[in-house]
Amino acid sequence: MKQPWFALGRQACRAGEAAPDFDLPDGRGQMHRLSDYQGKWLLLYFYPRDNTPLCTREACGVRDNWGEFSRLNAAVLGISLDSEASHQRFADMLNLPFPLLSDISGDVAFRYGALLRLGPLRLARRFSFLIDPQGGIRQCYFKVQADKHAGEVVDELKRLQTV
Image (cartoon, rainbow, N blue to C red; front, side, top):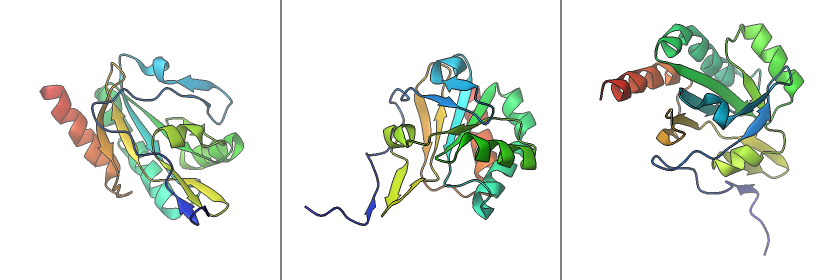
């Protein structure tokens, strides 16, 4: 059977499920694992490419809300299929205070349901997952608006932490 020119990977993770584990390098080669963030809230956001207009706006939105994320005991990790070197250039250019992880194989994006294949091109879809301090997915974002996403997540963190 012929494969379609696009494929979405597996079904996306859902709120209430345990977050899939990962072990990925950042732009400096430091490895990051889900277990490193136990006891903290974690925004795991997947994005298509470094240095593209929407991805830049999304990363800058998180950077500009960094104080709120910190006050809410939340870490942030951006993930795309770009190389470690590309991530480091992008993070340095934008003065990002959070790591960008390199998922060159696309395995982690696949496990979260965020891998998109367009013919020979593979990208991470603009999906985000808010993971609670125990490692469970609390909120999924499948229709991310790059300009508003960081504020939306901060508002959700405030709501979840007052319940």
